[in-house]
Image (cartoon, rainbow, N blue to C red; front, side):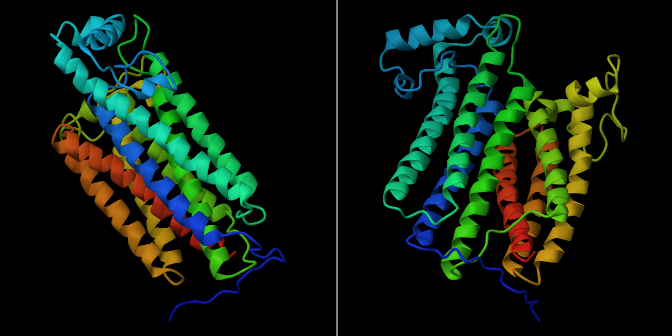
Length: 351
């Protein structure tokens, strides 16, 4: 029998707001973020992130339209370390450059679409007084997070443009990706709050307790390690599972100290990512069991997300980071964030 709980309400009613319309809008925004995460993953896996060496917020939305413009973009790319030390000596042609340019351009274009998809409807709902009381600050904060995520993306690209660097900083990559996933979780949480408000006028927003914060922290560590794996190409450190280099703990470079190895060595980071995953699984199983009496669908979604994610992670390793598998792994990672937010919200609205 499903458990029941007292519904906590506030004297603030839904008022003149339109929670249902905001819920539909926020879900559209959430799926655009998922698409951005997927395209960003492909951009990383194809080493396309440094193909566009300038940030032009408006004119950059239009790709090169003739051969002269393509050559100018290609010449800019030739000035950076990635071309001079890696792709140039490998014989990159203009056709090769156009391929990597496409993915970075598509990623940036989606970012622009996302900004407009959030800002314009937000302004419209605001003017129409359709935002329920208490939600304006949160929606503005989510908009600001989106702007910060775009800025972090440029800082990430800029970190790899010097002549000495051949790749972006994995720290900036993790900040860029985790800000996107945090924003995604916040949007899902807000959409669920508004959905509940539409169903139960006066319902209070869900809250994060200590249990929820602990679960979120465990998942955050796994996402951070995954971002570092991507940034350091550490997925290529081993194509075997469960052992690496024929041993449980791989050899790694600790000459600069253990902390340096934990944050810089691709072999150790790969090892930590593959085994901290089980800590995340344990935390999510506990969450799903707590959620099940109240919202069985959320419990099933959490189990499905982490189950598929584990299989995809192992398959990605065994195939030497096959593009479609690694992309699917990142896609399901975004879904895992959404289902985790759903589960935590179920717990938080019954506190």
